[in-house]
Structure formats: C-alpha cells, structure tokens
Amino acid sequence: MEKRSPSTLCRSQSLGREIGHAASETYLITRLAFILLRYLGVGRRWISRLLALVLYAMFLMPGFLQVLYQYFFSSQILRSIVYGDQPRNRLDLYLPKNIDSPKPVIVFVTGGAWIIGYKGWGSLLGFQLAERDIIVTCIDYRNFPQGTISDMVDDVSRGLSFVCNNITNFGGDPDRIYLMGQSAGAHIASCVLLNQAIKESKGETISWSVSQIKAYFGLSGGYNLTNLVDHFDRRGLYRSIFLSIMEGDESLQQFSPEILIEDPSARNAVSLLPHIVLFHGTGDFSIPPDASIAFVDALKRVGARTELILFDGKTHTDLFIQDALRGGKEELFDFIVGYLHDGDTEALAKDATAPPRKRLCPEPLLKLAGLVSPF
Image (cartoon, rainbow, N blue to C red):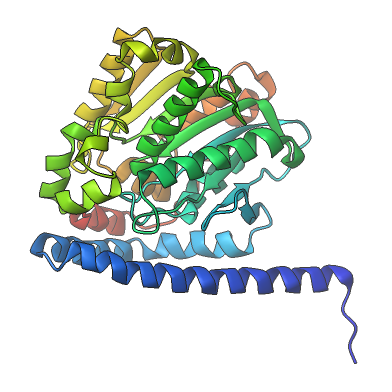
C-alpha cells in the first residue's frame, strides 16, 4: 500500500474541507436565491438585467477563468479563514511571494447590491496588489435575505477586528492597515467605520480602534440612502426589497453616513475618522458620481480629512473589473499602490521597475461587456 507524506495528507484533508465547505455554501446560496426570488417577483426590469448579467459574464469569461484557476490553485492565497461564529464569517488572505518585512494591508469589502456580495469577487484585486507586496484581506459577510444591513455591518466589523488583532501572524504591518469597499461594500465599510468611531467617542468597549485604520478608500459607493431609494427602484432594485434590506424606511438615515456625520452628536466621532478617499467614475449609472461628491462635501463641512478622485467616463464596473482585466498601467491601481507605499523608498523603487499588469481578456470582449453591462 502506498504511503503518503504528512504534507500530502495535510493538503488532501485541506482540499476535502474546502470541497465540503463549498458544497454547503452552494446549497445555502441556492436556497437563499429561491427565497430572494419570492421578494423580487418576475419584473421586466429584473429579467432584462439578469439576461444582461449573463451576457456580461460570458464576454469576460476568458479573464474570469484565469482568475478562478488562480483562486483555487495559487499558493499566495489563504482561503476561508474563520473570523466569527455567524454564517459566512470567513475571509480570504492574499499574500506577497516574499514577506521579508511587515507589509501594508488592505481590508477589502466587496459589493453586490447587498444581495450577491462574495469575498471571491475581490480576488483579481487581491492577486494584483499582492504582486506589489501588499497584503489583501477580502471579508465575506451575510447578504440579504440571509441577513439585513445590521448583520452586514456587524460581520464586516467583526472581520476587521480579526485583521487588526491577528494580521501580524501573517506578515502584515499593524500600523499600516487600510479599509476599502466597492459599491455596496463601500457603503457597508463606511457604516462600519463611522459606527466604530461613534462607539469609541462614547467610551464603549471595543475590539478594534478606528485609529488602527490609516485611511478609507470608497470606490463607486453610495452614502446617503434616502437619495438612492428611487434611483435603485428605477434600476431594478425595487423599493420594497431595498427597504427590506435596510430594515425599513425609518432606518435609512441610520445607515447613511453622509447624514450621520452632520449630526452634532457625532462631532467627536468625526474627529476620529482617518483620511477618507473616494473614487467614482463620471459614467456610473448604477450609483451616480453625485453620491461621492455629496459625501465629500459633507465631510469637508464637518472638518474631516477627505479627497475625491473622479474618473472621466468610467462606469460602475470599469474601475474594478474591465480595467483590471485589461492590464497595463491604470490610474486607480497606481494611486492605491503609491498611497500605501508612500514613504517606503525601497517599495517605491520596486514599483517604478515593476512590469505592467498582465492582460487577461481581449479588448473586443471588454468593449462588448461594457456595452451590455447591467451595472
């Protein structure tokens, strides 16, 4: 009988656990999808967007397949690390090839309309930043209808606590932790940050401090839900389901950071916030750029440190998906890398000579995907 080495047995057992976890997650997501369908009904707008999503994914499939292969077989990723006791309380960790010194860390919260968010959506960003000696953590969280906005905020806060308290074990620099969110993830992450600042300003017991976050990056996010309800309804995220996600009309202000920061009672909390940098494409129809513009204006009114970067003509997915699959040099990616490596002369020197990012999808398919994108 053939004997297997301990390392082989360990990999086999680990793969078995991964397969078992994937199977249980697939079953759960399928069951929740049917529950979600009961909420959505079969509206014309919803069906048309679903078909557009299928076409969009088909056009980008050459790139997605390469990322998927890397996600399951790369040695640079630690998948499904448990950070809490609730469903989907897991995170993925993307590590540089060489961790000869503590590395900066980005904690990334993926989007997905509060419904289809998944930690794996951040894999392309994770791998590309890991190539620049940056550790990336992608936090999974309960989506609707498995959870509502309070659950999502609690989950992400719990995941962020895990990172702040454990990242040194993975080679991360605890003094260089950055929080980033995209779309719905940008909204959730901003709520997490502000809620924690409010708790901290009141002297409540906390498991992580806002002071541990060096900066917040919000990509294509919405920060005032009262201004977005009707817009989302016209886009196919119907008012009834959106209000169910947000726990009713009366809770919209509670989960709108743009509104909360201007409440006089939040003055001390606002002073604790890190530098806030918002990115938005001017061609974004899913969440209009006015959402980021208004939030930055509100932050400036209350004296917060903030910055807004607009990308001319870029859509909701250009900055996060198409541009990343296109490879080469790209302004958003270069800004983030430069920001995290600011003051690190060795890292900046390596960045200056780093090869351009690899193209993962042919340009004609990227153009077609942009034409049919439902986002």
